Length: 342
Image (cartoon, rainbow, N blue to C red):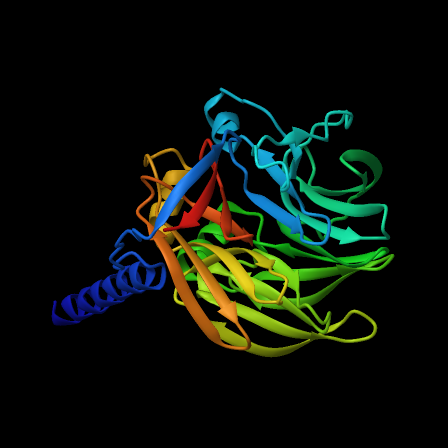
């Protein structure tokens, strides 16, 4: 009897330890105090504007939009890529992916300037089988170029071009089974990866806790990967052949999502400070989820400059600055928010 009770006690301790670890490592106990020194000056009615990127030289923005909540609930609004002129001041984006006839549910995007006249756009597409779609942008007109598919696209989340012919993308999960995904999400099993394409596909970084947003440093020497389940940013040195060597991990104390660079090369990141609440929100069980915006200057200076309980900005996934304004995209909210500091 004593042996049975001892075994039961050990199992209870293990269970309680697991629950406490899951809650603490996902930010559940964190207190959310709303930042009050920013005003909302515009709301752009795009549902699920999950990613965006800015051309500072040509003063425009590309937005990736997909009504995920509508697809989940059977009230789908639409999806696509949008062009927003940042000189007009009217905050009215133009849909530019209308001529792309295949089903298109865009997620992470990448923009690469090819010459003075046009850009390359890469977009993760979750319609049917996962893929990466390549476009070229001439002014505000989008031209379809190619679709990339490969078994290595297990659960692609974000993509970044190294050059015109090669790119990196993240898989936010390494497992495809229900139990494997649960282990990654709740046990923090590090099974996701980064894949490099240059005519062939190869895993160049693995053992990551939920590899999410991805970007390249201003000097093109390092790859930065967001690990929201690890509450960290991971830095890798890029070798001549595209392979990676791990440099360091930066603890940022929040669930980092997409990464944008400003003109100085500083990082701006949309974040989810409470991952369990975000998971409930994404499943349609909660009305909103908290948001956090951080800036990383230099190698290790992390500044959390905006936090909201979700009532104003819910589940922030990306932020980019422009001329004193902050453009904040969200995973499932019905608008893209433009903030200005008071």
